[in-house]
Amino acid sequence: MERGWGEGGCRLLQEEGFSQIPTARPRRGRAKLPEMKLARCLQLACLCACALLPTCAADMFTSLLDVRQAIIVERKLIGHLRTYIDEEWDRLQDVRRFYGKVWRLHSELYGGPSDGLANPLLAFTLIKRLHADWLNVVYSHGARDNAQALRRSLEQEADKLPKAEDVRGAARGLMRLQDVYALHVSSLAAGRFRRASGSGRLADVYTSAVAAPLSGDDCFLVGKVAYDEEDYYHSVAWLQESVERFRSPGGGRSPENEGTLEDALDHLAFSHFKTGNVSRALSLSRELLHHDPLNRRVLRNVEKYEKLLVAGPPASPVRPAAKHVKTRDAYERLCQAAGPQAPTLKSAPLFCDYFTNGSPALTLLPAKREVLSLRPLVVLFHRFVTDDEAQRIKDLARTRLQRSVVASGEKQATVDYRISKSAWLKDSAHSVVGELDRRIAAVTGLNVTHPSGEYLQVVNYGIGGHYEAHFDHATSPSSPVFRLNTGNRVATFMIYLSSVEAGGSTAFIYGNFSVPVVKNSAIFWWNLHRNGSGDEDTLHAGCPVLIGDKWVANKWIHEYGQEFRHGCSLNPEE
Image (spheres, one colour):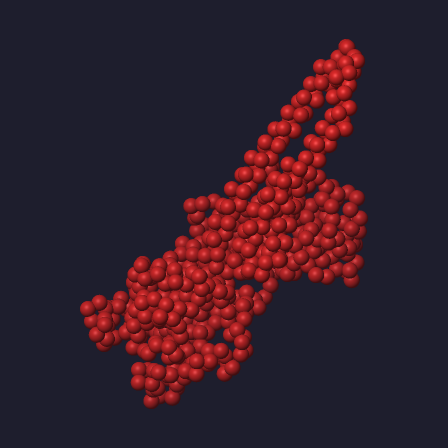
């Protein structure tokens, strides 16, 4: 069965004898009629507009720049909603005046000792009111016109609204942050970034100046995304938090909510069942029956759970295996580390110096070089660009950003293990791009002009934006990297164009160290050995951004054109 964003989607498997949640089910007492109309109008306008307009791309979550643009859109919608409220207030004032007039007639005249209907004028106005006035009030075009005006305002912004995939992508981003940084879900839902320490106590990973707690409905949506993907490890944690928040004072139904306490209980019960905790599934289903005692489907499930219930401790959810990161533990440990780590090779001296590389361009202003690792050789150049240069590069890229892709055979594709948007800048885009090329050539001693060097790639990361462990050099002869006909990527030069408050480090998995984001600095490393084979020690990853807006610029330098700059060694093993 196709799963969507409706009120159903709970897959109680038929072959196991469980009844499936219907795809559409009435919700009892969810909201008053005007609230329901407004909420439905907003939801339908959002969904229909995005479905009809092809420009409504479902990749807002992949770039924080797009998320910032969404703030402008919502600010406009707030203004439209204010106008709607004012118009509705005036209309309801008229309704209230009509109510007061009729109520006074009944309390003072019709219900009094004298026979009010003896007065023909009162008798006439009663007949006229019941024939026309009541219908004009009840079927007033004012409410319809106000709602239509609000709907039109929303439709004008439809091409800028997020789609369902954006919501799912943002939810996956939160779960990614939960996993990589071992965040405590209850604390995360409360707006705090904390993880359990070795003693079991919660310790702050990052203290945010702005608290942004999630509602029960917010947690339900995250849990349902995991649930729809059959990821019950995450759905249990988030749906449990949703239930707790729906139960709390003030956490009940709201017209804007997608889920309810009953929905959360329903999905959480089945999630526990799928993870082997039948007793918990049974208790939650019984609680659900208190809210909906005539629900035959839940009654049947309770009977099934009771038959399956056996003695012994309940099972705990198990985190699903990594699909793309075979070195997940090392990757997450390095991402969680604060600052650079000690070198793995104790005998290898690391150092800092002022570096000219024999280039006249660096004689008067040498580069500030810090050697971070010798195997693989990774060098950090401090203050490689200025604030103005970094801002100019970001400004040039803003209008060119598209969803980042990875090599997939001979083609390129978007994937969940790379969440960002990127743009390519030629040196003709602005003089600052050409200046960066000259500076990179000076510190590396390499030919970086196209096609020996790829155009400058500028990347902006999204919600939980990351790039899981990968090589920059091609590992397949059919890779798109070879389209330039200049060989493989021999080296990488990456510039941090922004700072972040937490997360976002570059982790070298086999090198066993990570490089935190240092604004305006640059990292350089060799991807290939001198014999042309790939250096497996360069396996690296972009850790998820926990807090902040991460921008980087990549310059990939190819083999051809470096013959007299980075030649082969006499040792074929090097």
